[in-house]
Image (tube, rainbow, N blue to C red; front, side):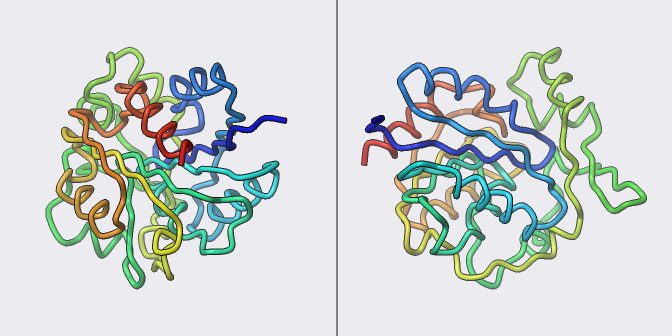
Length: 228
């Protein structure tokens, strides 16, 4: 029987499960059972339901690592999520009860990566290629960043209005990786999220997608969490 905990990886908006590829391979090589599902990005409730579905399929203690909007999904899980024993935030939102992404983002001017969201007729927001390559994935080789842009999952703008309930980071141990050169979520906001959740925190000089541009640091943080 595998004594290592399971790892579930949660992608954020404008990404898909493949964004974790450089993290999945080394974790699998060390014997971890890793799952990186796709999320519909249609509403916070829908996305949390998908995560609970995946967690129910795990065979034991599971650490959940989430990126960006994925942190919203992770935080919304509640205290009764099956098998979840620890939370790892990778340049991710870590809201508190009563907060919403829309209210948070409205407190200042749009960050460079999010300044020109393209909302379609069905209410889904897409990132333009130039902003994606130049700001969202600024440290990624441009040809690879364009591939990431091509497979992006748009986010329903309804999700920006969803209000957080009691966050599970109040009851589960948490870890946080701050991306010091993030142009999507301000690094100071990430530091605030990490501080108020009491997370064990590391900081790397990364863009918004450290699981692509700094995968070794992400792997190390997940392994540090899983060792507890």
